[in-house]
Amino acid sequence: MESRTADVADVAEVADVVVVGNGVMGLSVALEIARQSPDSRVSVVGPPQRPMSATYAAGAMLNCFGEVTRYTSRHPATRARFALAREALDAWPGWIEMLAELAGPPAGPALRASHLPGTFVLLSGRSGAVAADNFEAMRAAAEQHGEPHELVDARDVEGLAPRSDARPLRVLHLRREGSVDARAVLAALEAATARLGVRHVAGSVRSLLTGGGVAVGADGGGGVRGVGVSGVRGGGASGAGGEGGAGCEGGVRGASGVGGVRGVCGVQLDDGSTLAADTVVLAAGAASTALAEPVLPPGAVPPMLSGTGVSLLVTRTAASGPGARHVLRTPNRAATCGLHVVPMTEPGDQYIGATNLITTQPVTGAELGSTHALMRQVCEQVDHDLAFARVQRWMAGARPIPVDCFPLLGRCSVPGLIFATGTYRDGFHCSPALAPRLASMALGASDGDPRLAAFVPERLPIALMSPHDAVTDTVNHALDTMGEQGVQLPFWVDSTPLDEWVRLRTERLYEELGASVTLAPEIIYPQFLAPKSTDDPDPVDRLRTYLRAAHAHHGAPTPAPAAPSDATPSADSLVR
Image 1: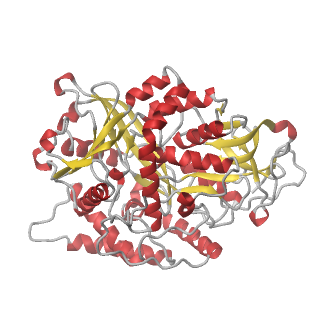
Image 2 (image 1 turned 90 degrees about the vertical axis):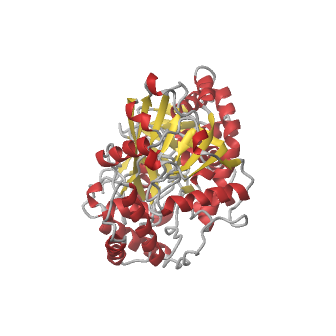
Image 3 (image 1 turned 180 degrees about the vertical axis):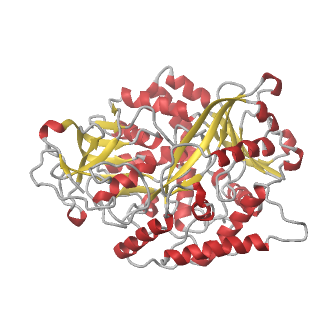
């Protein structure tokens, strides 16, 4: 790959910290840096229109216990993620007040008005065993941790009006959880950071600058054009570059990193201009690891997948009434997130979400089939009157999902580079807990945080179970998905034929990978059981190439323990 070196004239700006990404995570980290160190020069880079932004397409629900599943107590990493979510749940009321105060009018009052506490979790009559297990796990966790909750009669839940054959079997009210308008949060973050002196740079980052001013990109010419699983640095050599380049002068670090690549000292934008900095924080969502791969050894960091979610903003008709005034959602269910209806500030305005199509390569918009399923299921299982709502806006965003589904947070072996990404569905909710820690790292005040230790960027994929158990788990999720989507067999045939078909396809996948790894059902299902969902011609080869590089770099993985027979969280197993 041809490398490009920045000249002195190319360096348009110099900052202490550059944050790549203007979603909720990037803006929250920038805000906290400015609050902790008012004299620091902070720049946030991102396009104002935020194409495929996960934040902009979010509701957004503030869910901690609402996201508990039967896996939550299974592994130190899942317990650590739960602990961060609990901390964030406690922090959100104060976080909203702080943001509103800093932002001022009109963004501050709009943010306060959009916060609506209370979530009702519905175990639909259409749900399968996975959703039922997850519902019981969240109820047990709420009880064991003293979280205010109660089981309620579905008839008492305002705005809940499913079809008669999809009535909820149980309903759990989580009093402290609820929602806040994601777009109001973004507006408040933008206003607050601007008032604190954070510079907003409209544009996209093409590549990272390394010591000596070398622009190291991933598209063969210094730029990043996509994300995906890769076992090599952007598909080619990273380039060496000269020692005397001027792109990282002025006290910006140029210390050598790994593999001969010097420390990161800035970014190059799509227009060719550069921005030098002591520290670069990668909060670019699904594009983050593609930016980082050229400066890291092959296989060092789990690659990022793209989880496309489609949502709708609707306005109800006068005849159908205002609908729910609290979040109505199902548990996380077979191979996807829960259905949810989130009330907006104006009565009658509601957010409907969301699909979750995970692919090795990014997609550019909504998928017709999953969008149709979302609209049908929310009308059947939550409120049939939504069939008459007027669609005001379609939204699609790409969730950043590492191949092991756990976030990438903190420093790496390349000086000057910090990861703040890969948070899957948890980034928005956890931002008040994560931003202060990541800001402290960016300012050099903290080398690490125990709560983030499980999510260091340079690692082998985290395995929650053995490959054998992962196959069985995929089968269970697939059967539940088929049932919820309406698959019916003759009354005299059980699910054995479907079970065997999914098991055979999944076992064949693991054989083709030829390496020890466990994959979550939501990763296997769209790409390998429904291959028309992705445009990637060979996702197996892409994943196999990464795994070989990862095992060469980190060594052979430690076998994961067998799944426990009872995965319900216990009081001692969930980190407080």
